[in-house]
Length: 234
Image (cartoon, rainbow, N blue to C red):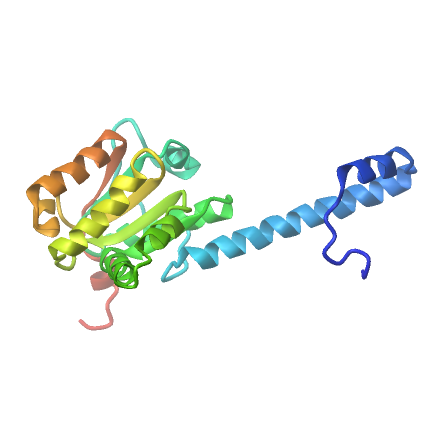
């Protein structure tokens, strides 16, 4: 155990050891390395889940798909494959409040983390506050670089709270920087026609929508709020 501390294997040394090993020793090494790889993979998954910043733990297993409507040529199988992340494509989860948009966004992000993909989750207002603070402290470039390490960004609740023009510019910077480089999942209860109200600038909203539409898909949600249906207050 002492000899193994901080040990990084040298392939030439390992190769010589393997060449001279007995079948029993080879079996031991194979079992050891298999266990080590599994342990490192599990540690990476847990680290990615912590770094993602999900507000709750959500999974795709048991998710109620009844309120989600997919594009005609794209569905649950393609979503679960996460192929859209490999292609740096975007998703917009749009529709009524309480229909499972945030749940689905977190579940997709969780699945990505379990497959070794870096993810960051933010509410739109929380992300703007984070960027605004970084700008005030003269470390905006560093913050953008940190966020840019993720292959998938989740921006939740876009349009739920008003954004001033400075905040809109900061959010646009994230979206523009991610274009064709990483995927973004947006959740919103506003159709594209009202995104100008969110950004406070029709041209900026049009530029955002243009990027999303180019490499993106919309999953539409409709139905009665799950929280309202299962509320204790009747």
